[in-house]
Length: 326
Image (tube, rainbow, N blue to C red; front, side):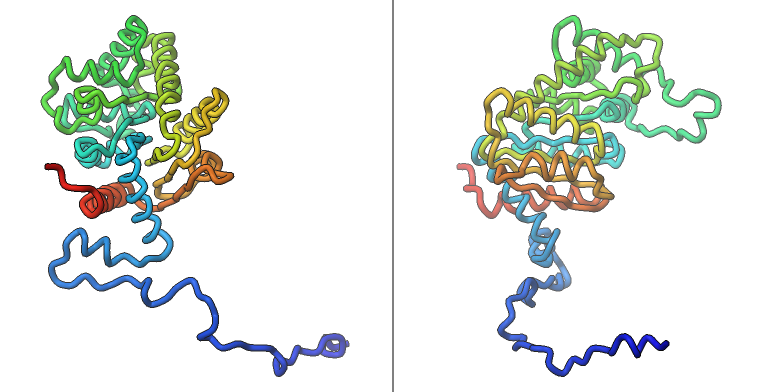
């Protein structure tokens, strides 16, 4: 039995069509990218982006960050260690000087890499070359600095981020101008450090104190909740390069804030990463902004490209909208 005895191919003769010119469409030539010309400026580059998908999201997000500063609301930067390892601290420091970094939330690797940059001018050891002999992560100065800061934080009842910044400032390291922690401590910008015990190299050094690490990072979580609370009606949270720890920390801070009676509406969140992972998309972009509580963005790409582009968009938007200081 042939299939054509059971099924006859459909005829299209009576399909109803419509006039293309009458159809609403999502993309028009007015949204297209524009060629840059021979001597493009940053404004030319940003203006040339297609007004489609991420091209729109980047500029919208920049506008919301500038708005947050205007409203006196926090712009919180959640960062993973890769942001520091790819040399982006100077860009964030510049944004901090301009008023677009109200606080920094860091995972433990940020403390490692930023402090090594400040002290030695380099970081990111060759794990493959040192793991075989058990030497990976055993740099003495790094372990001593981070664990000394944790013990000091426990004694003084402060957070770990502040304590590490204080240690760096006390050392007056040769490369302080490249250290985000040094700059933040020197300018009273909160840095909260959120550890996973055992995940960072300082956690197995001879001078480690688990109680001190736990108390200091818990203090930072409490401080972070206080900063997130101030996001209500205009604040921004940016997640750069943390796929698990900081998205989980942020979600818990959101629920703590709302549990204590603060509604936390009209907030903006964004996740930047090479690949869009489940937790950042769920815990940063979608859940905290659901039900009309705000708007979330997802932008995909390498940090070493996307963060400078984001910074350029912020500065360009600020120049366009903010009144000149007299």
